[in-house]
Image 1 (cartoon, helix red, strand yellow):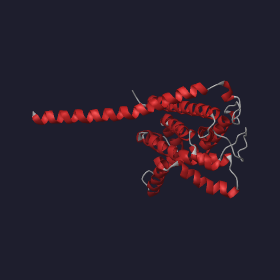
Image 2 (spheres, rainbow, N blue to C red):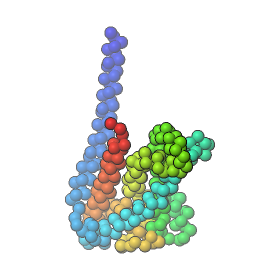
Image 3 (cartoon, rainbow, N blue to C red):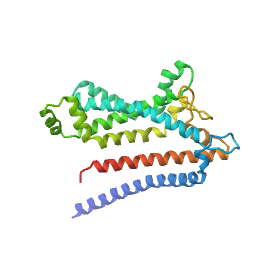
Image 4 (tube, rainbow, N blue to C red):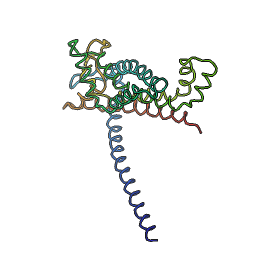
Length: 279
């Protein structure tokens, strides 16, 4: 009986510590979100989406930064997602037990945990320093390098969850390997593959460090990918550190826009994941 009471007390103590730690972490998240919502919604207006970034003391918006972020992120995902999909497909379907797959998986895990500033420095040395100027292309390729490991991991995991009897049944009907993957494996894992791409988009939407080393910034509206291009993360970084109240308000508005976009993508990814889970 004494041993039972001791175990109950220990269990209650550990549960209490777990709950306290969870509440402590969540409380800071709630405080940050509440501050962001109050400051961000207070700074939101129609001009945010219709006017360019202003000079200090002037009225303006974030149109050039929003458009620049959409262009750079779209191009980065368009480059990185197919590469990650193909690499993950090879690892799950063709080389599941090969040494090459083990090496690729190990390197991919390193890239997943690598600080994004390292990626920015790498693209700076490879592209920016060689051509002699910052550009939207460099920013997009930096984001693509971040997208690839996320899509590789999710693609491999989702395809490995597809039951092998499905592949065997399709092969028994005489379908070639490429058709088995495209018509059977991809269809079975379609929801998970889309979820991986959405998570990759959410991952790179708020990246600042890679863009500071590659696309830099632009105070004017520009869609020229071969020149410096504005982006929301870079504008937020610049305006938040400035002493001007109007710039700080725009930084709060930009941070709210990115946060809402990332939350929307996360909700979509969770909804797709819930659809995939059998009931």
